[in-house]
Image: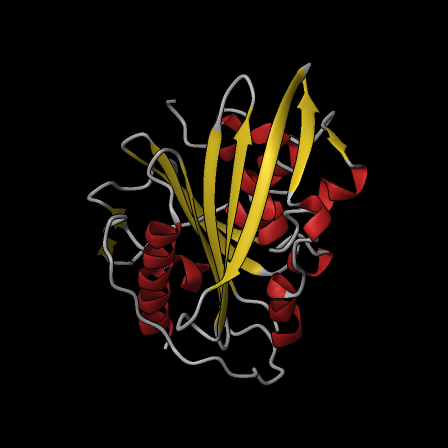
Length: 244
């Protein structure tokens, strides 16, 4: 896998709206972190006040981690309006021709930045190749009402398991989520597993801070709740320190 685009990871095309959680970011003027660390930091949950966009895409880019396990980003870091980023467009394009059963579950993983309100929000994204894993981080600076949409929806119990067919291949998806405590003001972890001609394991953590939101996603054999949550906590701590 020479390029760490989510749309090119095995079977990821059959994941409805994974871009809402998975498209990522890192680099710029950030620090270094490890995907295998075990300690996390954060703040207590609180209700945000209504504000306008606080940071530009350039400022967000400077708040991203620069390395994960010693690895620099595998792709050039992108910054701009969220909906215009190439990684976001590429991941959304992978949904073309995908058939989900039950059809109502096509929006199962739409609990991140899929809302139209995020399209014009300042954002930055990049991807990493760490061993056999794809790792991503994304930062956005929406208004408080828009930020709240990132964690508004939950997965219906009827869609904890569904199938998706793409290019004649059918995959069975199992999806679960959990609240993450002591990370920013609010955070949620999602696990997506797919089995079929190929298998995939994804852990993604989306968090909301007072004036920015972010997500960290890990795809591959080392993906786990502990690793994703730890990395998200480190990414949040670095962004909070850089932006304030």
